[in-house]
Length: 346
Image (cartoon, rainbow, N blue to C red; front, top):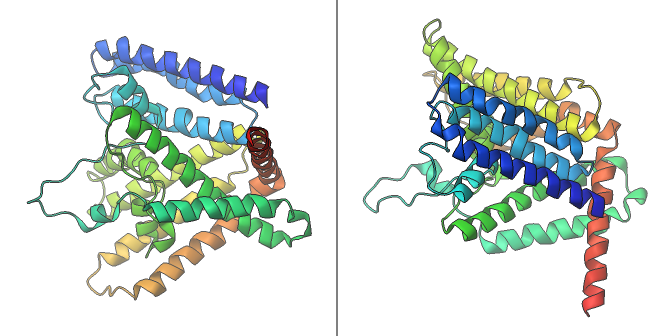
């Protein structure tokens, strides 16, 4: 495990040096092609760095932060767009905004009318956070008896594990950054299990920072381009489909980092299917005859669709290559190390 931590440190030292170059050198170049050419070597490096990590957790998180978020934000930065423009006054802020899934919360004016969806993006209550940490701890304990559990039960537990671990890691990252930078950070997840539709799930509740990056780098440019060729609804459909397609490709890349095998394109099919379903849902909502069903009915339908298609297309690569077993083993190893430390201190 020490070697894995050493590799992680070396990867992130390389990333910090690369982002410092972008801050001090690339930012001085004029926006456009020239700045883009100066940034492209860094983008290529960020695609390579996760290959030096063998730990599933370290590899997946580093790939998300560097290969996906940092690269997309740097591409926007090349044209003075996105969260890195205007240039932050300090290098520390530039690095945090570049590679971490964070967005500063701006306090609205007391006299302003607050959007309904924006009001929902409140920080997670402490009791909810405590419950989720407790549930994750129970899951890790239950994993020790997984050999005696039915396969579908282990699969369901692992799906819950993925959600809780990703959310808690990002909450921890946001809390650390918020403390270091002295600012409030918007939550990355917004209780996705309370979604009332696919549009609500993907655009307002699940991994909001990734959705924001895809909206800026893919959805808006594609929709703007197709407005010249198609109707407004057609341009919207093209933008949504492009965003989900790119998300599918990036997830294939994340899977490749963890599995180190050629892609099977099942994950891409998952996101293309959800893109088509979400775009169709948005189009139907825009019609005059649309009458929204009860929130409980639409929410159950949306979560059922996500769950069924997830088991069908999103998880098979993980299960076939025993990535879940490797991830569970890493969690149990860390839990065992913590227990030993606590026993030593006591």
